[in-house]
Image (cartoon, rainbow, N blue to C red; front, side, top):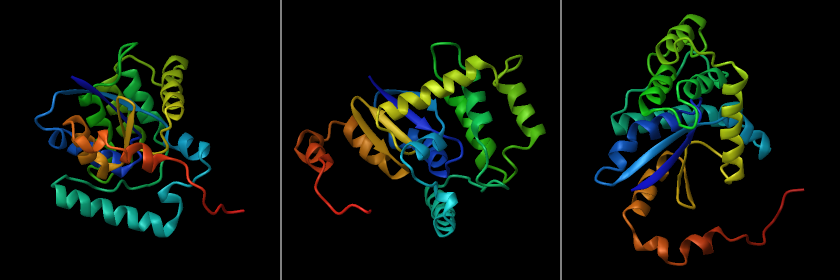
Amino acid sequence: MKTIDFWFDPISPYAYLAFERLPEAMQGLSYRVDYRPIVFGALLKAFEHKGPAEIEPKRAWTFRQTHWLAHRAGIAMDTPARHPFNPIALSRLAWASAPAGSTPSRYVCERVLRHVWRGGADAEEPSRLAALRAELAPGLDPASDEIKQRLRDATDAALARGIFGVPTLGIDDRLFWGFDALDMAAAFLRGDPWFDAPHWQREGAVRPGLKRG
């Protein structure tokens, strides 16, 4: 049985779509998933890149495309009332729900992601966050130093592994980025011989090219 590391941030509509479609994409395969919330903003900072919602034409396209993808896949989806927003409280909540040494369950991640991407409400509205916290981590403090460190550690581990965006699926030493990479990841798990041919290493090799000044 293979382990899939599912790196995500609840701010990402593509992460939500990938999460919802993952069981269908991997149907018939033997696998387990470790869900790993991280801070997408830290990846953007590390690679000196803006998020899609920070570039207005790209923001408009992102939401049009993700709603089309949701429609085509039969996934319920509503854009939250405010976006971008600060998702860190939600990611900490997911980590707070998991015992030390483990990762958040699929149920917890589902509740966190659907909190954002279903209903069209404000993901940071205090009463909604309080209700979700009472459900998923009763009596625990998602803002404790321990939980903050777990989220930082997960994000640092993602950067160390070369992850630059969310969602990313890690299987063995391979990384598969984006909602549209689910089928590619499933093909790898099925043993598609393409992955044993030179393509992977050859196409990932550094090439000379024009660099912006």
